[in-house]
Image (tube, rainbow, N blue to C red; front, top):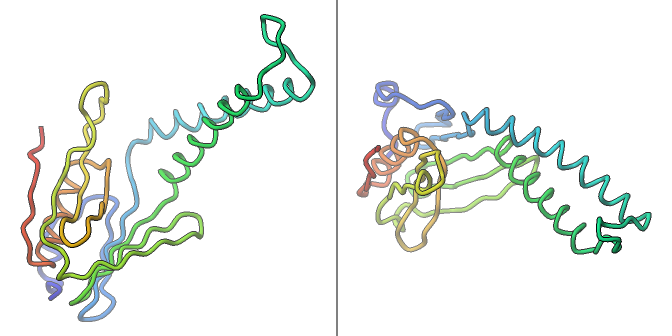
Length: 190
């Protein structure tokens, strides 16, 4: 049920995707996040500065430091600052180092996400997929970065990719819809 190599070479594969044929019936689509370099650099610099601030705050708290009012630094302030540190560190680590792959054979898609040696897999039977839907998941309101994701609808719902340029979710949506022989609902690019 996997299309032949001649058909794959005719398609324009977006940056960040890589196709590997394991054998006649198995194809692996690998995806790594690309782009958003300026945002990633900003987050790295922000995180470095925030880390220094968190360390100084913790040292002040441990040595009985006081706030401008003369009161001791409350523990919740330290927890909130370190909580923000951890959230941004996890987000940045995921953005920079996560890799996702989709292993397609005649019966199943195995979606695997890898992050720094940790691995999570999800088996999605081909027959459980009713349609693939492209969703706009960014660029509304104050979010200035328009982005799209791709979701499976069927017996179980699954988000395959998110916060990607239109062409990436569109390409993957068309490709997987052909493999699963289902409808692909596309959101037009603004």
